[in-house]
Amino acid sequence: MAASTDLRRELSALWLAALARPPREEVAGGEAFFDAGGDSLAVIMLHTTIEERLGLDIDVGEVFDVLATGDFDALAALVAAAAGRAAPGRAAPAATGGAGTGDGDGVRPRQRIGERIGVLAARHPDRTAVISVRPDGAETCLTWSELERRSNAAARALAAAGVGEDGVVVVSLPNGIPHIVWTVAAWKTGALVVPVNPALPEREYADLLARVPGAHVVGGPAGSAVPPDPPAAAAEGAPFPSAGVPRSAALTGGSTGTSRIVLRRHPWTYDPDAPSPAGYTLAGMRTGQVQLVSLPMYHGGFLETHNGLAMEHTVVVMERFSPTLFLRLVERHRVGFMVLVPTLMRAVASVPGVESFDLGSVEALYHGSGGCHESDKRRWLDLLSPERVYEDYGSVEDIGFLTIRGDEWLKHPGSVGRPSGDVRVRILDDGGADVPAGVVGNVYIRSSRSTQPRYLGGGPPLAERNGFLTVGDLGYLDDDGYVYLVDRRADMINVGGINVYPAEVEGVLAELPGVADVAVVGRPHDVLGAAVHALVVPAAGGRPRTAELDAHCRGRLVRTKVPVSYTFVDRLPRDAAGKLRRRDL
Image (cartoon, rainbow, N blue to C red):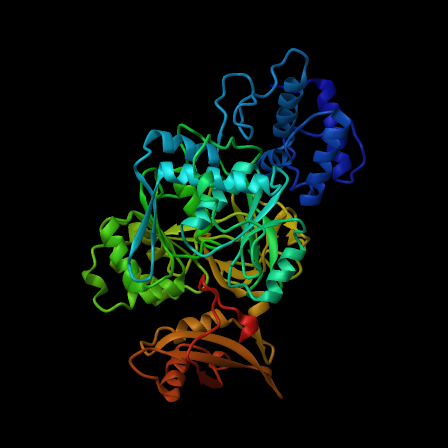
């Protein structure tokens, strides 16, 4: 719908005010907000004044999406459409589905995830939805109809405890069926779900709960305000009607400092005719697959587990990770989709006789970029084939992400991908200027996702340059526009004025067969300020000699990057997701 002249004039005034620019007759239709000096705060100010001055109801996310890739004309069209919906005689948005997008013009509303589970339970009640696997390999199965009944019962228990559409439910349970049941139940009540590590230290757990006062807790080290299982008598009865908009939040920052609770931007709603992951797409992830969940469901296993259920996956959940059991489960259940982290990739690839396992059913393996050494990556490309291995780069703050498939990676080894679609990447120096290809700088991203994160209980804004945001990663571009990560700025070691990135040194040491795991840190030095020190976990075959480690590093690194000392340790302080807790080194 085209905007009227009067509406464009009013919107122009608001646009210019948000940019702190003098008023003029009208903004040029092709002017881009971020290129004109706007940032995330200015977008929020513009959205607020549009709603207040023009009396319109527009979701702030829509405004961000339009301005990320569009211009003034695109925003004017969005505002005109909202004005049309508000005009007398226009049908109100359809109430069916609550979180749906139906607007009275025959557009089918999106299904909440709780509704989606009910639809699938009615479609194939006796088909297995979830298989929970204990460390000894014993399995417990849950059908779609059982998942529907148990989540309804749990939802009624939550509602009886006072949980509703404005509530927050902290799900602090280990991997298994109860975690899924209570999460789906909380979404049925319309509450926001925060998955939390049940083994979180007491101090960190208390700090987290202090930032979400009034939250209802399921599980957790401090006990629960809600029973860990719904009463058996409540397992039958009428379906629990889904309410509100199902949302979630995730913890970040725990490996380097105090955790922050980041609200996930996209609701857990789906197109009933063509379900895909809520808020994103993944090549190789399709409806009806068998998915193996080996990561903690409070962290890396959360998104794909529940998106997989909405896409009719049979979800096989490992209650505790074991590399040999992982391979057996891929064979036994003909797994098609799975997600791993680099530390677990190395553990699986190190299983004796790994080549003898049948991995032919795997359509897609996804892994994050953090700490994935080149030798481990190449091992998996051999085990599966490059076309079935995907690496992605993103963050909990969800400012945009990159993906690279294995065959593309082989042409650009070490890269995490090239921007595509609406994603743009800039490498900037500390003064905000672009640096040439091959020069390390701060990685800034802009996309339709690039908004300042929203936190529960507060949190710091991300550094921002002209609408581009960064989570603190350092990297560079090659001549073809591919992105390479170097390290996090907070982890960098300054050795006599020379920047040393721990990830680079760790990658070199990890090449040695005698090294099972490694972490590199800076140690105080009287002259240099800091010196490189390596913590090495020996492989099962025996401890490598210090001279061997030193010779290997000197053959691949410049002098300032070679560790001056080594310590052999039994294990490194990694969390259940495989992430190194550097503050504990």
